[in-house]
Image 1: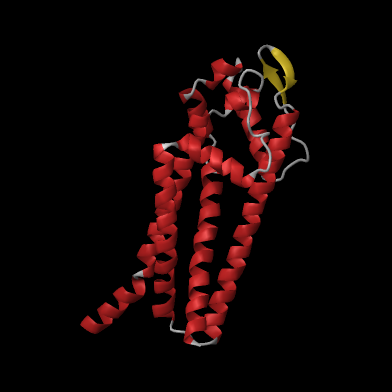
Image 2 (image 1 turned 120 degrees about the horizontal axis):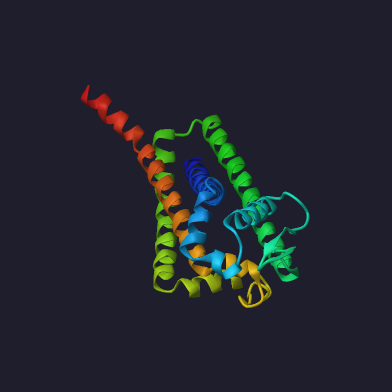
Length: 231
């Protein structure tokens, strides 16, 4: 039974981390839209698009709502280069449809991870597992594996973000419609590679802070035991 307890504990650890990762994406992308405004100013997006900031932010809000599942078609009428037109073209719509599927899939994975975590906790309670020992150590194991992966990806991104960015698309998309021509496509002008780099840093920072908070919390049982021994 002890081995089963440890398996449940490790599944719990990875489930919590998976849920935290997806939540980090959501927080970074949706908690503060001023971040996009700052990024557009940083990369001088308005000049590349010949648009006002209000119009670009309107497009951004509509696009991000679409990625969350609002609306069936990504179509936003706005003024670009002095003309009233749809900001997105057919290639944009196809690729962002795939991105939406990916994002919603991530939200479903988070839900599944939360369900798995609850089931593991219930199992450990019902079978009278040693919570103080199993849960913290299982999290440490999951954190060690996750930390190694995050470190490797982080180093690779710092060395050559473009290569990591391209590999990401090769893994998650089975076509080359994610490759856009800035001369023809407005969306890629609004979303330069530097913006994606900054967003990855933002996501990573939120994720790491969350991992550290959970690590600190995992030491509470030990601290309480030490206090009891000293009392």
